[in-house]
Image 1 (cartoon, one colour):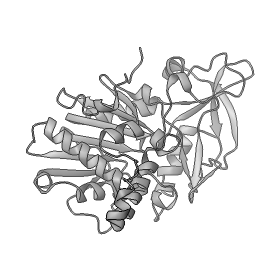
Image 2 (tube, rainbow, N blue to C red):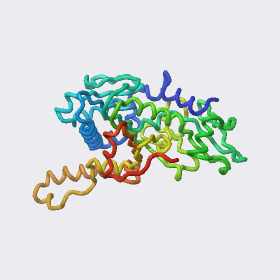
Image 3 (cartoon, rainbow, N blue to C red):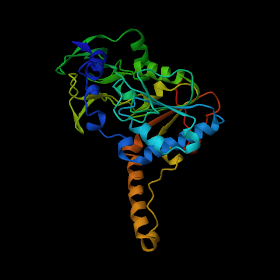
Image 4 (tube, one colour):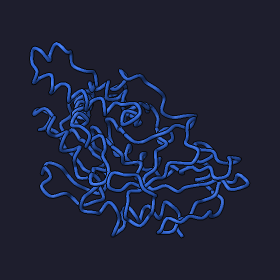
Length: 334
């Protein structure tokens, strides 16, 4: 028996882990990056705004954390202006190996670059940072959930120490009905703090399935995914293991919490239909515009990808407020 944190770490990133499979994550689930090139275009626009806010530094970093097979980086590079490309230093931070035929401009590494200026972007990274799971027992005491490789679980001892402090502040279980669950997000808070701390100045953005303290799911969100379908989370390397992120707990000073719908609209992605008059004047352009509007609608749908959370955290004062057009909400509580 292992804790879920230890079991997930081995199942995802161990020698035979899920993220070392040759087909890569895109063979099992579809992110905003895969849904439409409009997403990479929006990130490229955000990178342009960061560059302008920083005063066009001699070297501008774009750091893609949890880069997968480099799909987002490839899309952003294809959409950057030539004058920006000469100064741009793209980094992929990923534990899997570098894919063949990747753009040679991309620096591929397993650790964060330190002391860079620019945009750090983590799309669906934090949900794959392993966490422990707690469950309320018959007396309402939060206990550690232990798991075998075949997915069978049992309750361990009471949650204690810093994990208990985190639960009390961000996802209280003491006195909750038996069977109530929480994912202890402390490792994600630490991972995000390290990522933000790697920037000398600029903007850090985390995009993920998310929930806030006033609306935590009562039985947690731990799930498995394989070949495009949700499956039972079994930590044997056969499936992705993920859990939604308490982004409000991760947020540091000056952070903004937005929905993807709000953020993408602030970056110019709108799912509005083209005018019908275009169908008569230029049918080909109308069909193309209709397809683009459909992709934008998928990226911004409130019940789908548009409901994802965006945690936006400036480092230094230059990049504060770059997405204020979406409406600012405080990121941290207390």
